[in-house]
Image (cartoon, rainbow, N blue to C red; front, side):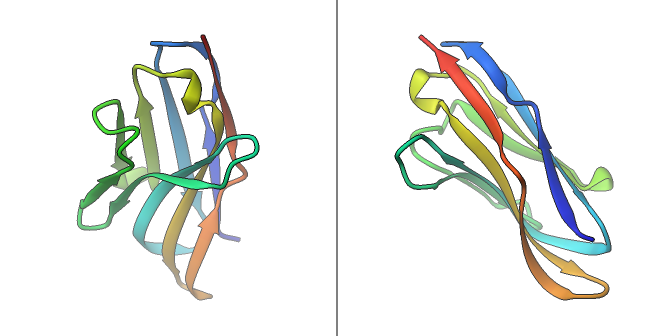
Length: 120
């Protein structure tokens, strides 16, 4: 069964840093795109950052120059390094992946989410 498992959330003071991880597992032979999204209480889910298999990066304006998305292709693991965190970054962060699998073709996967809380 293909799945994404996130880790790395927690409580941090404003100005601090956290690194989120997203590990993809299952019969996946290619990850087309991986992204991080977040949903704050009472708000819609929003894009944070994406990276394609070709290495193209995309960031929300609100996180540019503070967050960095990266990957370890050998481990099928993706990261979101978050620096200079602000209280408005508080949200549940989800990873998302567009993958190609051996048994079920193209799938879009979501992780269970990890909570990031930034205190002022």
